[in-house]
Image (cartoon, rainbow, N blue to C red):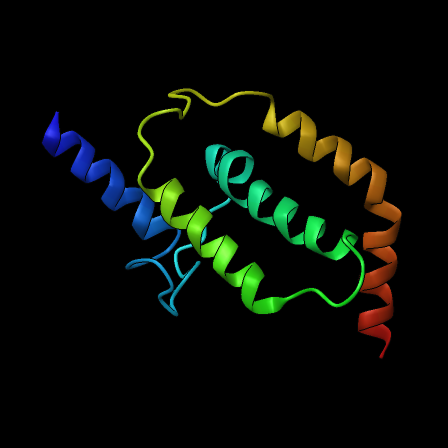
Length: 114
């Protein structure tokens, strides 16, 4: 159990903070895996947007401190990831492409005409 916990913390660290609280390589190994997006990145963005919504100039140092506290706490968590994928990625991709196909085509047409 101790070795399992060690390797889980190590894996979480490599995928997020990359070395420890406040290290400059934060997000170096960024992955858009389901558990990371819903558990980690979504929470960081929520905290960022909450600061922006509070009015006035956001305190960057306080936000950085809050995010580093959250990130390091998240690295120390155990368990909670699904062993099997959820949802239908192909169906989601197809629906997004269908929705944005015209804009994608227009973007690439304009880019190649320049």
